[in-house]
Image (cartoon, rainbow, N blue to C red; front, side, top):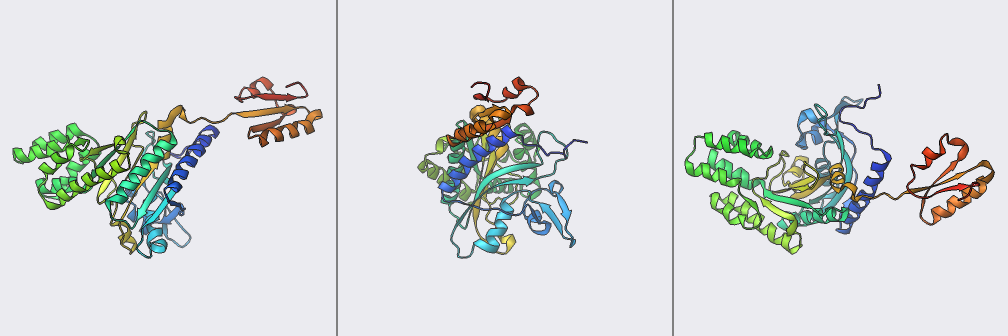
Length: 384
């Protein structure tokens, strides 16, 4: 009778304090780069946000309002912010820089360690189609992770247009291309190789598909990428990555970045540059993002856009013991010393201490009670 719904979790005090501490640093960094925070409703219309979010329908939490409209708990933040930008903010064609810290909801078939409610921290740059905007949001993500205390991480950058054009160029249709993309998304490179070997293609085309898996590293892989794609759109994608790399060098963050031309995403709205970040001690991506130039068109106001989201709980896991919570102090007093104890506790708080004020008559086991405080415990009336 005390079980929680599948995928839902309690946030106990220590974790809550750690989240507050890290969230404050992240938000300050976002604001320092000129991004403005906003909030969107937890509930959105299924016909708009549910359809635009690119999250599988079976992962949406749905309910009906009193008028019979189907609502969803927001499954991500990019689609709601696109709605707000298109309807209320993006009016003069000038870029918008927006940021958020919010919970999103995705139904789970089984627990499997994945939460159904989790917090995302992220930004969206709306109205700027340039590679400069992509470089800025990646550099900002690197800056945020460093500000949070993370030092060992890598951002993989790619271009969805490169993979799409290469696959269509070689296998000829979207269905076959989807099969290849699925292997890459699941990072099943052994399965990808075996599948390529079975395709009815020339040895040259098979080698082009297999070479794709080797296109990971620094800027040296750019030339190899140019050599395996023939059409103009594919070559444009390679040049976009090359341009992005140069701009990330200008931001002095290229040491945190690697190129990965076989990077794909399950989010169908990405149209160009995309990226993922990985850190130590965490087997899943810490965050991801990319360019989504077609999404705002679904809200009747076309505009280019790029951004990212960081999975907050995974970031905390990667930080581990680096997040330190200041200890609480405790003033325990008897009824006779109440006034002195209240005054003393107030003095400690004015100095910046976190102080628990506890009447001894309300404690059954004093020794067990004081063990929870990592700092000094004061006994008023019984010596200090």
